[in-house]
Length: 103
Image (cartoon, rainbow, N blue to C red; front, top):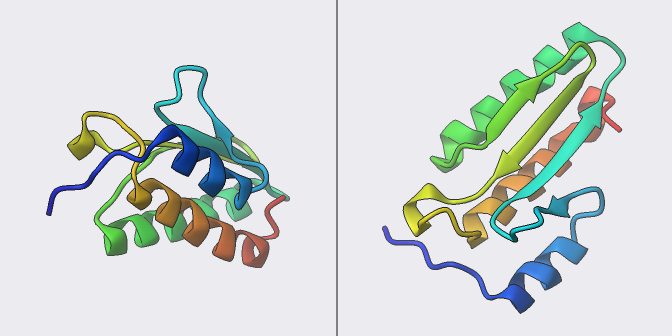
């Protein structure tokens, strides 16, 4: 199924609904980092995010640190532009973050 890039206005409107997420300087990806209590908690959240990504069929660049995780996402199928899928993934991650103690 083809995905359409979002307009700059749509990106800005959707980003306002996601505190903590930021738009890259070249406006082609959104990203966020989360701090957790320890490495085990961060690893558990990475696994949960990976599960969500599989469910959506949409994957981010996901980085695990000692007690942090970072996500950066855009849609390769749309030429690296931002689409509704990127924001859907971000919202799903926001829904599960508190359960992992992420801040």
